[in-house]
Length: 77
Image (spheres, rainbow, N blue to C red):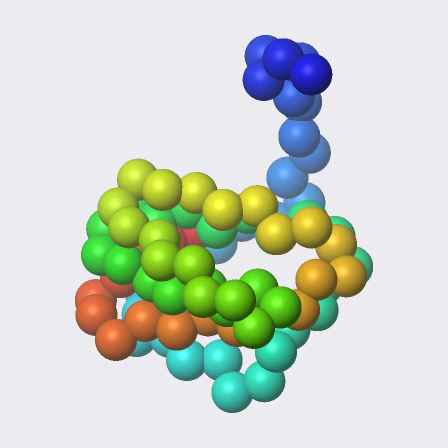
């Protein structure tokens, strides 16, 4: 698939500011898209750590457990 063929429907978007610490894993029924505007964030997906930095994006598939953690002043969608 070519990236130009993507045509996502965004049901909900919110600009957030951290610090963030999820106490429990979240499992969404839809895709989750997290885009870092500034700062950095750790995203744990199925207990595997992923570092996200400014202008980076991660897409989390449905029914996937994830945790968010940030100890800096991070802005993200």
